[in-house]
Image (tube, rainbow, N blue to C red; front, top):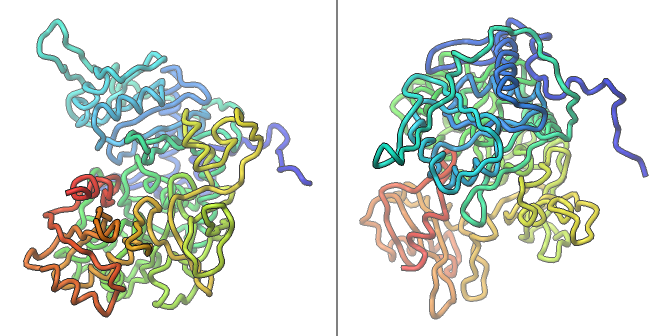
Length: 548
């Protein structure tokens, strides 16, 4: 049995040094555009900034494997930190500014960073976090402020108990002038580069440990499966505390020498303008963003002819949204990924037929996929089971969470206390899927969202697709609710015209869905709750409407 290739020292010095290697190849090419300030940065400038940021971190005590946390919107400084931590063998842990102080306090304590970079608008939030009883770090934390605005805030009722979250310094005041290459430690492909958080069963997000290997191989998969080119430009629609902000498209384009355009806030009109003005050739977004863009006032007048690659991810994309983009000549298709593996795992083959639009395609170049039953046995085509993925683009584990690690990555990912010495090699996604006779994978929804009604399995995405075709429905989520006769039945939570009656909807569905799949009740909301990058928060919908 062969062993994995191990490079002889001092080989592998390229690991993590993305900016220097790209600078050597294309120093004058624009790698990053800050649309908020209309500033362009070449790869030479990005590498200079990365060296300065690395020195800032090192001066604050950051060593190999130490963490640098950030609470910020999309800014050039986050790109600086990505490149800088790579050079230092350190870990960048971006945290969501949308989380509440107790959640952030717990996560920040878990990450235990040497440095916390805070964008000025979140100074008050961070003050509450650092004052929270759940905040407890072992290191002497250095807080650095970026952006315009106050860098110190007090949070207490009186002066004696006031806790002041004063930034130790600001980014511009502290950034060293020396932009020459930094001395670098030996960094392995298995060393972590990112902590990216994802949902947790306890309500507090888990930090997924993303090694350099995963970043690299996901980039390979994306470039080869999607046909990316060095001349490609993308407007970034994902926040950089999310895997979408880094691994979906940013790092693959940096790998090639492409251009990534960021902004502090997502604005559909601005993204359409950027596609038009900068000849945007790649667009990846969640369905809600794609729908918002297609209904924007600028939609009809925007020249979309430069778009070569357009992908929807983060949940099922409605047929109506797909067709809106197809009608404009854009070959939009659905993708599938997760923080723990990839996140880019599938691609549509050349010339794919439109009847496969409800699938996520076939596995990418360096991805294995299978559908298994409860016993872990692979199922034949057409049968629904859990989707499992394997490949060098998989993460290692969850940080300091052996129980959850074992459930997703296999026994040895958590610890070896149960005698396990090897991983299974498969990442359990928690998603239900099936493979059709042509090898296309169809995601049927989360295992926890499926419900059994009268002995029949009901997969909410299929019901939602049918309900969403009704002209009075703008958006819909279907959840299972208790029922005395059938055990569980569907309830449709709808954004749309509230004159829609249940009988009208069920009559509409008669030719589209089996009767046991029909929703048995309706609830209306003005807007769906969201989490992450404009993804609908099914848990919040279930909490509000699941028991009434």
